[in-house]
Length: 154
Ligand code: SF4
Ligand code: SF4
Figure: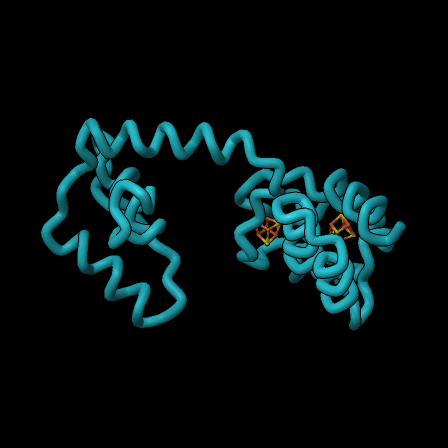
């Protein structure tokens, strides 16, 4: 996507995709700061639906992402609030992703140590399932934590 249009943010692709669907009147965007709000306004004030060429770029990106070994965690933190074991799930997944994507063994190990410094290691998971019900990405968190434990605690 950035090779096609280096000025367009990733969020702009997602929001314009949703707003381009037939019958959609409103798109909710989770913004965290003023810069993100300005970015949203820059393409929604004078909205242009995705062109056929842009839709093709999105499909290609979807295929590339689908083939990625990374855990598709967005660090939204929705899963962490109710975890009875106070496990920093997105922090652990970020550590695992640096191993999966970059093969950075030492860096992943350090990131895992930092993510679990205040307790809540991957092996502490009791498989209660609270986090999986909260995850908007439908990540099989329990299974992924077992994988992280085997890789990063071994
Ligand atoms: S399944 Fe594991 S990680 Fe998820 S909320 Fe329960 S204890 Fe925490
Ligand atoms: S809810 Fe899902 S996407 Fe969000 S931080 Fe947790 S694992 Fe990642």
